[in-house]
Amino acid sequence: MNKKCAILQPTFMPWIGFFDIIDQVDKLIFLDNVQFSKQSWQQKNKILLDGKEHQITIAVDSKGKSNQLINEVAISKSFSPNKLLLTIKHAYKKSKFYEWIFPEFEEIIELFLLGNNQLVELNTKLIIFFLTKLNITVDIILSSDLKKIGNRGEYVADLCSQINSNNYLSPAGSENYLKEDIIFFKNRKIKIFLHRYSHPIYKQIYNKSNINFIPYLSVIDLLFNHGPDSLNIIKSGRLNSCLLS
View: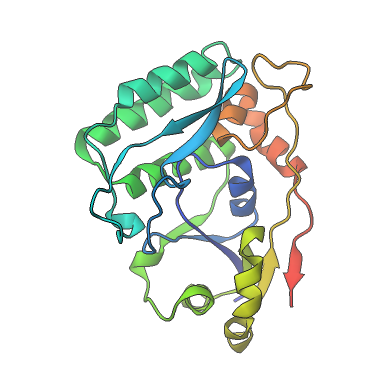
């Protein structure tokens, strides 16, 4: 019962702080049965294209479906995987570790979309691929496979209990609502730790001097540029977690 867990929405090609959280826990719950927010990180992220920040987006079928849960969202038939792949190829074809990651990434996108169109499954598959490349091992559970008890903080606290974890590492952005709902964690004897992170600066393609470093891009930017050393760079930005009381 001393295991630490994290509960994260399975977003599209997340930033490196997302993986710093996962690297510090034993169990990860993908929160896939809460409401989907259109134009959120669920369907978009940023890469570096020709030295500038560039947004990539997965078009989804959301018209008239404003109350969809994350695990109900389908990728739109208008989405072009070839366009996505060509954009990423153009952005990183001259990067040092292009051959180390792109062929596998391309295969995942192409094979997945041949037989599946669920956004959450694509996001999950890509995150697992990135975890493998980063050499991060964690037990993954879907919240939809667990009981849904309560809302907001009560639900999060109960999810921790259901997987026998009494230490919860939370993204810092959740601090306010966790403070309001802390009683649910105290009743279950669960400690809340807030993730703290200082974004490291690393060499990016077309930006060798780091003078114009662009942070908060998808983890794929780091992987293309630094390959197997990426996890060490991620860890370099790690600060001590803050215990919420």
